[in-house]
Length: 150
Image (spheres, helix red, strand yellow):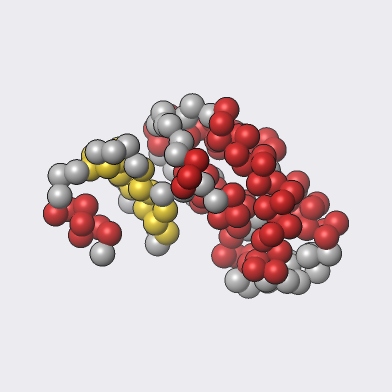
């Protein structure tokens, strides 16, 4: 449904479009990210999903941005950074569901997500911040200390 609205109106501008990622900016500056089957306006979540895509066009990361902090929910980015559907749906490594753990992840790392966003001027800055401070070993270590890992 969302894609039909985009094609019927001229109130948007396509920032980038590839076979897997489409970023659209509305007239009011709101960004919409279509990444595979996922659609979000949450920049942190979008970057967390895109980090997982091999061979993603590097020009996407050069996009300058202004963050609307009211659209950010750190738990969404943390879901993808901590393994996404591969881990939380299959529970290969975790022994609890995401809904049982998300509050603790958000309490521990939510401030870090917001801090990274506040310092970022481009999508690449967010990506680098996530890789540096919220990489999988850091998140797994926390999960292990909480007893969320098998």
